[in-house]
Image 1 (tube, helix red, strand yellow):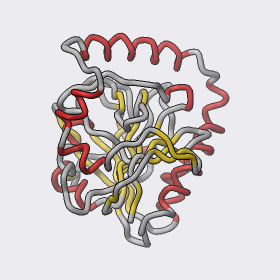
Image 2 (tube, rainbow, N blue to C red):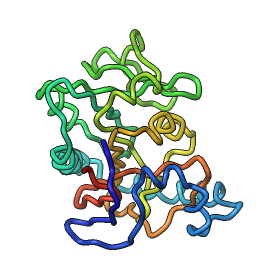
Image 3 (cartoon, rainbow, N blue to C red):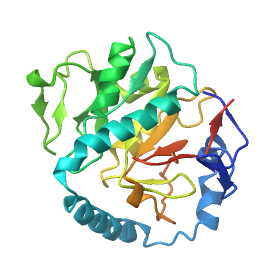
Image 4 (cartoon, rainbow, N blue to C red):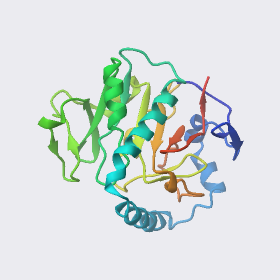
Amino acid sequence: MTLRQSHTYICGYTGYPISTNQGARKTLTQVREHGGVTQDSSARKSALRSQLRAARKQRDPGAMAKLDLQISQQISDVLETIEHTHGSVIAAYVAMPHEPSVNTLRSRLQDTGCTVLIPIVSGDQLLWAIDGNEASWARNTFGTLEPDPLGARTSSQALPTCTAIIVPSQAIDPRGFRLGQGKGFYDRALAEVAGLEHSPMIIGVTFESEFLSEIPTEEHDIPVDVSVTESTVRWFSTPD
């Protein structure tokens, strides 16, 4: 994907002028200088995660299937804006408990002939294996289902081949920065595609209530290109 100068687009509305994310990935020092980042960013992130996790646990479990359908449709619409065809590779994920899921999207992509990759935790890194039948999968130490690691590839091998990378997030802000679970798995994985001339589109997924005015940032944080919730798509960079 190539990026051009853009603003934040929220359902056609323009606000919060920023540079393209490809540029932001290369100038994180400048972003931090203007983002009010302090030395206690890590502590602020930890406190924010606790609040968000508590709020997620209060959600009605019966509504999760409907939210999956809504979020999956939003991502499908986003993917229609970029070139992806039969045989395209798209990285997705299996949701942790209380996390927004994209199961409907995974099925749709496979039905259209796309190769869907699912992450596997390996030490402090993510490996990537082809999506398939969850009945034969095992749960990792975080309680998340994972494919058989046989034939799985590293992030440096797998992610540059992707058209898009769909990333679970606990929160996203108007600059495109996301808050993860705090283990750094996606930070390390996304670093493998940061700065590539034709980098995959990075799509961050949260619930609508988790789009926040600001998220504390650190040097390793990489912004997403677009955020998707059950009700809103917000663009931070747009495809040419």
